[in-house]
Length: 602
Image (cartoon, rainbow, N blue to C red):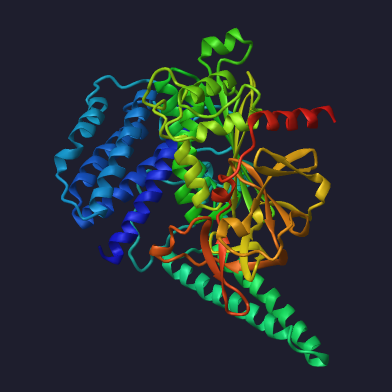
């Protein structure tokens, strides 16, 4: 595919998205000529480009869409919910067909025949609707009109002008100055003319291949590594040179941070690019489930890495479908419970430090604790009625887990939530659940701003240095011997009214640790989506910004490791996979329950 093809496909995505959002966000009784013109222009643009490249299937479908919209703006037909549904289905078909062209596949024009026939049904209607939208408003005949259609001819009554007068020769002919109506004297017209004269500021944009941006980010990452090397050398100097060295490095650090933020901002897109696709999803899913659901979005201006947007679509789709199918009740049940017949899904995004938080909240029935525990027992999982809610909710992330009694088109097969969790973890993020009976459920996704560079804590075990993402760290402290207990063979530490199972990083990584006694080490509290752990290390080296380097294919199976980085001294350090680490230990449900109750009493 050539460069022009890629530009066309990119523009098609934009036009299709614009048409879909216009159809979804405009109530049928608020459709205006501007609305229809906007849809028409988008369809016309796609038709023109597809015709130039010989994409006949796209040209054929957009042509009839264009004809339908033209009839609507001419007042021959009226836009109805049925027409909107048909146009939305046609947009789906266009995406599918354009995708085939983009992949270089052969496409027959007949592939869109069914969609064309569905649209032509409305074109063959003989009775125009009298309430159809008119492109022009009727001319007012009110005496109060500010603008007369014709201005008075000054002096006409005093002129002795015969009906026909001799024609002057060209030499003597002169063009009399005709009086003009003073349009600007009308306040309404003056206001419109003034408004029209004001030019709207346009944002200048260019299309840049993301690989070019990635290349800049990689080079910037190498500069960050070089900075670490220089910082390491500075620590070996002394005297006035060391002071000057530090000042120069501080300035370099500031400039690199500015460059990083500027470069990163190029890859950043508002989450509206992600959230906008869910209006259609909620509409269709609610219709299939015979429920009334309104989607409310907040924080659409929050920016996130383009790669994140591409990888978050599927997880959020699963959560939304589950929320509509399992969470939000039918209109009859909601009214019986004293709720509004229409349920609400709140999709919200905001930035918190170096993280982006995405929350999806419904006002449905909430998760059924008893059903989840019973299903877990049936699957042979070690559960107890004494488990705290937090542990119960996390059971839904187990593969194949579903409490649905019947399988529907939306959910119920148990192949969704484990995928959600895995996808979020692949983005170095975490997912949390809060649920309250008859109040609803909230899913919270905590994600880094970018996958290229992250803030981490360097920890030491023996002679090895490992990196823990700061996003997963709660706090760190030195262990006091009297706070360490044992539950069976599992050592635990009581901290802030919670029991934390202790996990030795040295044991996990097969390293000889310098600290043999628990009380001599440092505890780093880690909070993952499935569990919490007190990680025992020998020492804390400090916080630092690191460049994430992907592992080669044959190293990706190394347990407890997600990636690597290069330290200031040139050595390679492994970045720990917190999710894998936390899976290695657990506390009996009874201990967790006692822990929870103790916190409540205190």
